[in-house]
Image (tube, rainbow, N blue to C red; front, side, top):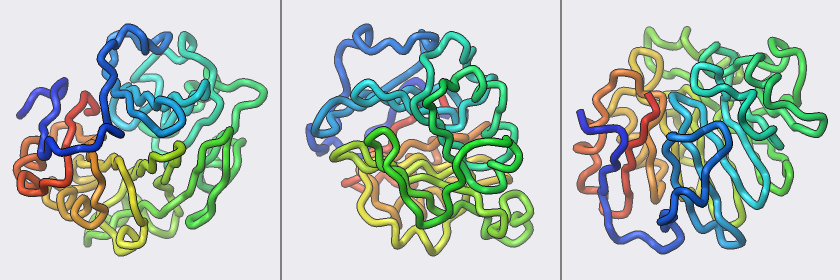
Length: 253
């Protein structure tokens, strides 16, 4: 298995839109010292993505701090900056952690999540599939996330309405898939610059499924995440001929 702290380049011919910051010390996230991150030019400012672990991500843009599926196993959120926006994909404990949300929440924090998760958490704004909002100047659209393979639909049933999210930071459009398998809806998601796809068994995608989803979505940069013990090198090998796509591996087990 390839080291998760490195990334595999499937294509070197990427726009400067995806330049990584050269000085990591200038981009430290309080409470997240030692965590990996990448920085991108979003057109009207820099977007920093910090990889906390598993499905827990942080996006920082123009002074706004956005957390996706913050879970206490991946950070002491009492030490982190307060959240402007928290996104939850679904109700499983490795995605919805009330204690982490409580530590990050401020009076003006917006919490966006599926209806089933809103009921479980007892607060927040439910966002249904195909609906979108502008939260602190960041575009958020909810898209479906579910298992489609026979024998696996009980893990993330379509009927529960779990979310993936399409996020827009000025020029950058980013897909955070949540727990899902390939699904027909992906063909209608439109242009995207960056995609996070889950790849752990038996709950989400196999490496072959993740490769098939990536070919359907066509992101410029692909991050496998939520991959547990799955061999990420299998995905890199499967996509080696996709010259317009770069696969980056980060510590997101």
